[in-house]
Length: 573
Image (cartoon, rainbow, N blue to C red; front, top):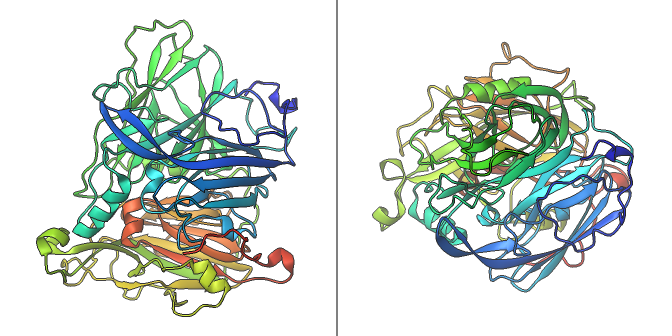
């Protein structure tokens, strides 16, 4: 972004119409108050990574997919046509969907899938939203390849709350698999066991030189000495949390999940699936080629993971093209200290609409379960611990997706598809972290059900999210649709209201929170957006196992507090 760009009008401003945009650096500034049109075609594309060729599902044949650009308060219209044999939906991750719940995208929550040959048009307004978000498929494990950045600029003439960067770059972090992801999900669930590790990590679709056949499959970022760069970092991976660093360069965090933060400088950062983090990087080192690297943060026990880092190049103008790149150090895979340090430094620039008083207080345990084996072929379908079957739950309820859209069932008052009795506290009380029942599978069962929680319009909500050690404690990235929330507290061990430190001054405003391994997080929001809103772990295998629930937020008074009627082209199940 050029230094004078805040005062410039982007020529040709109104016509983003049906143009797929890639991940190149951007110097110009779009002008707001308009409607942005995009045309997404769900297509298969044959690609080769690490000397292995396979067909993947993409948007417009791109991996990662096209960047959606818009400006605060813009109307966004995206026509999605499914040209594949797979069901598809698109979720606009972090978009708060004010009064447009029908366009949120999670399959069987707010819509039925877009079936082969069908088209659905998503429409929503970016009400008071700016920053880096992203979009991804929200059915099966399709988002492993169907994802892309969503960049929302401030209104014209409104500056960033930090010095203008010379240039901006999007970095989409991913995990890549040699197997068909829809078949892989079905096979994992049928086995009752855990998910395999991904085959490759990628930065903007490139694995980098540490992988076989990939010394030229590297993302390169050319930089000029003395300039400052804004990196929009997105973790679009299915099942892995990433550490990120740049050799010999510090990262100044200025935004998290599309909300400005007080500037905070770190050597490395950890980013969970579903999170976006903007950092400023100053090219202030000797002219050379420096590695940008991602590697795994794995806090759970006994979970396989890929340990080869993806590497990109942060290359100074004038550096020898044949020189060796300086390595980027990453923490040990299970080191939670840099995770805590990064979280400790996150502070909102402005904490507006923070509910200081609470009238709806929920305590929700999160974690894995092991169910007893009831299969006639246990060797095939009961490959979890002690011959059991893996599951996951919130408050010991494993979420079962309905056969039709939960929002449609609620809106049309169709009975038999869900119940509204998701418990406000755990069904059983125990030492959640250290004394969890773990006589697997005899007392690690959960209840199955499509159970939602109803919230009154305007309710001031606090959720205590508590990790459990039934199978293994683990950092769980919990994402809430339809809202951002203030992370007013977090800590290790069991939540204790008498000793918990709560920040009601400048807590970060996020849409995905990594609940600490063996710990808790407290989040607050005002339930002022009617509809059905999914809350789930953004590790996809955990969502598949049922680590989720849904909130039904009632209508308020008048048209500005009421969910609209469903769109005419809403897909049917």
